[in-house]
Length: 129
Image 1 (cartoon, rainbow, N blue to C red):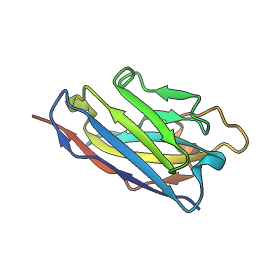
Image 2 (image 1 turned 180 degrees about the horizontal axis):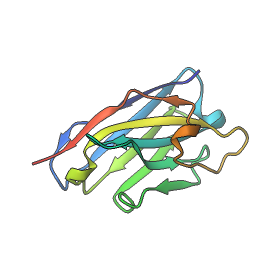
Image 3 (image 1 turned 45 degrees about the vertical axis):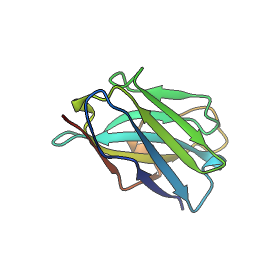
Image 4 (image 1 turned 90 degrees about the horizontal axis):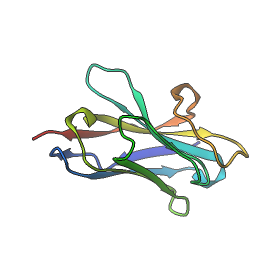
């Protein structure tokens, strides 16, 4: 079992920055888990934002955030980060992290929600002036 807790969401002005954290407990992420960040805006379906492989070598970004967001991980601390810069009002939503067990494959990830094994409860990000 893996428990995930997101943190770092808050109200920020357009153009501002936030860093979200996804902290895991119960089992080391370093063993098998790629991590994805997803978000759900009011009235919309949840969508993939970014993912990072177990070894951190591969990262993937949605077109809407590429160049503004950066995902990273610290396996020693069991934490995955999402640095969000140049925030826009359309980035508003609840942000979730999810763990996906890739077994021995260390260098791949994807943003398929149906393959995620564990989810956090989410953290609210609001971008507004």
